[in-house]
Length: 121
Image 1: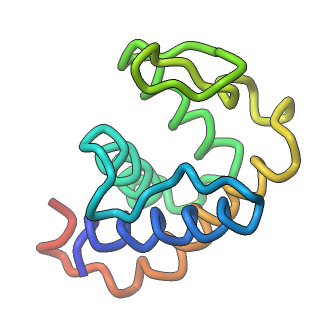
Image 2: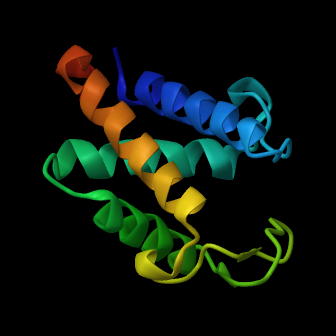
């Protein structure tokens, strides 16, 4: 298994979770824009390099990457305007969004033993 394979599983778990919440805006991995696949892959790399990182650290890493890519807080997620309502400290996120970070981190931790040494690239 490679990092990108774990990112795909994390993305699909996130998509399923969002659907349960009534958010049908997440598309299948194969249809996801490059920036979204890159974001998931970067999140996996973060957890590979920081295996003890908690949910808050995962969110902080995600947010730092978004800021670096020009994103900022906005009440609505808008990839064109690069705004996102989750661009706030972890403890200010709604509980359902905190759970999304926990789901991502736990999915990576669960699959990490399957990561091939060659897959870390």
